[in-house]
Image (cartoon, rainbow, N blue to C red; front, side):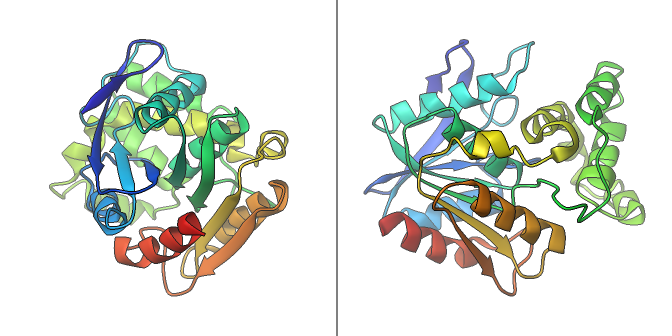
Length: 261
């Protein structure tokens, strides 16, 4: 299935299950076929109608030559409209950052849950360059897609350089470089330096749950806690024993409990 966003971009999505609508918003390198997101949709579809969509520029969705975060908010708005005009929303990693910005913009989100939006607070980890988005965009324009992926993995995701070197030899590297242009979008969604967007978060009136994994870096737990402290009435929970790439069967139960409550 697909829907047209405000600028004419085609947004592809899968719909599964029955019950109240839940929209899933992916993070970097993912589309709706990724095992975590397809698995999460399957886990939730026993109780909810799940809309698992491809963000622009990846999977079955098209793109536009000019990118701004507002266009991705419009994409999510179009999916919510297709879901009946309002929906609960879950966003993971940079998808969580996008979902928070969408809620701040006033989209009709009934409940919002995010898992480890990658904001940096309290100097909890090395900073990211203020112009990181522009640096990545320049590399994309120069056709240096592998370098884009490498820099994003090392500088933003804190993956050790030697591990990235091993990734280059894996069969997954080609797929990662194929979506290198969307890493510019992730950097835009997270904002200059991945600073916590406090002014935006304070605008959110949607009931919000921020989650983090107990095995993730402390900076991600700090980010989740800071999000909950900035959004009026928000909750924060740590899922012990899990990291950033959390299994769908571990993530689905707390999400389902929150969305049904």
